[in-house]
Amino acid sequence: MVCLSEGFYEQEVTVVARLLLGMRLVRKNADGRLAGIILETEAYRGEEDLACHARAGRTHRTAVMYGKAGRAYVYFTYGMHWMLNVVTGPEGFPAAVLIRSIHPVEGIDQIKSNRNDRPDPHLCDGPAKICRALNIDGTLNGIALFDDENSLWIEQGKGVSDLRVRTSPRVGLGKTPEPWKSIPWRYSVDCRDLIN
DNA sequence: CGCCCGATGTGCT
DNA sequence: GCACATCGGGCGT
Image 1 (cartoon, rainbow, N blue to C red):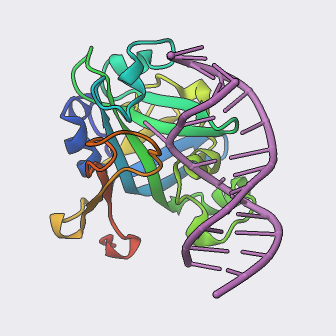
Image 2 (cartoon, rainbow, N blue to C red):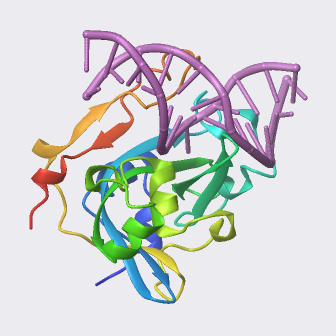
């Protein structure tokens, strides 16, 4: 298995969000590998994107998004949930891809245990569920995702045809104004359309 | 399955 | 203070 390169993440955030579909998110722990195929992503792009955390400018929390591509941006929200994002684009421009859903393929027993034995379809079908399932938290903020010497990375997958990719507005934006509320920067593929 | 709502801590106004 | 890139339980359909 081959890690996606640092250069891969330097592309435009919407391109990275699209291309991450079908790739393999891998978490290494003491017992081995936990992994899943990426099924759903969202792009967050720059200070002008009023849904992006960087809308408030550079702060302690958002600093990672302004840094180099290919690093994890992991943040805490709603008092109990962690979210995993991938920093993209040139250094200095804040942009990141939120990983929203994966299809578990390695370490499934431990993933089920981490998820308190939820039914299969709901093991990893949400950004906070993924972090719980793979034991991802703020200690991984800033980690390089193109290096399999680390404990979290993304590997090359089989790829997904454009015909299988769905786009739609991003989820959970609440009062975010247009055009940001409706811009179709959510990318998804049905698990059944993965090539096995 | 869908809708409603409470949980619970942090960052920014 | 309050909003928040969410989740899971409860209850109605």
